[in-house]
Image 1 (cartoon, rainbow, N blue to C red):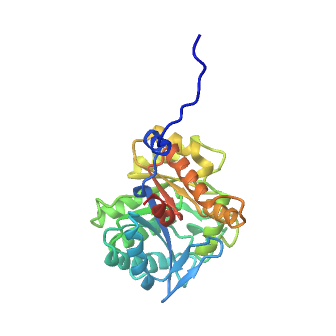
Image 2 (image 1 turned 30 degrees about the vertical axis):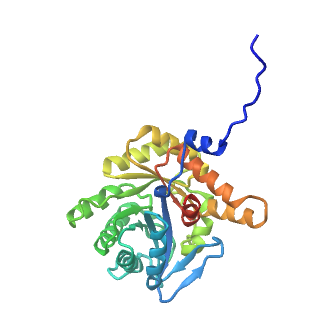
Image 3 (image 1 turned 90 degrees about the horizontal axis):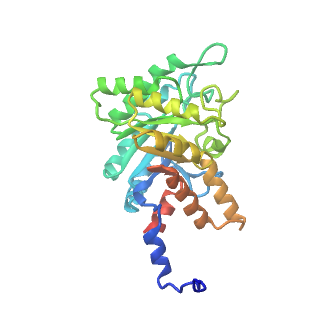
Length: 323
């Protein structure tokens, strides 16, 4: 007979747990998104995203230094212009809001990796991610040339990486070609390879003023029911020259993250989007959830699923916690 099992009274249980933990978060895992609004002396709170702000370019120096001091390695920039038109012409101006922001950040905190979002939805008066035909339908091929101009303008401003998020077919290839011809052969592309037509983007669209004025984006973003399509989209992006793949949103699509992690050798990023962030913040404000615990658990789940890096609005908070 085996002796009756008795629970052992382990000393330093918390230390042992950390030593045998299978998944560990590091501040190096995180990319912090920033909203940049054209203007001066602006630091506007975003109602739907507590703790997040819209900054004008001239307010970025101190923010960039603070982010770098926390050890966060990278930021992702979204631009909000004062003027919009049907063609998103402000997106590729040499003195556009993102182009200004890149220069300000690199001057203030050169160690920060600056990634720029390449899309047109924040810049078009109709709020769609591409050019429209007279029927109000997005024209894929006409949009590609504009996206290439946007990416090249960001590279010339000093961006370290570009991240096309439009979900137009063929955009990685044409951006790669434009960067190579412009002398930026080594500038990496982080492609939003798997971007679902999600309901979790609402707070972002308020923050960036990018909600479509009519219709929706289901024609070019992915059906939330599909995972095999995600593998096809990612494979096409790799063939066109993508250096890093991304899944967006993150937490509702952990199975998709795992599928891509198993299938591809390229680094994999996941975007914990505005709705994921806002839900935790709102529930914590009501006293229904422990904010810090939920932040840690959700980010750990995303990394456990296979993400090598995570875009999250929690980046400053998690950086302080990990320190």
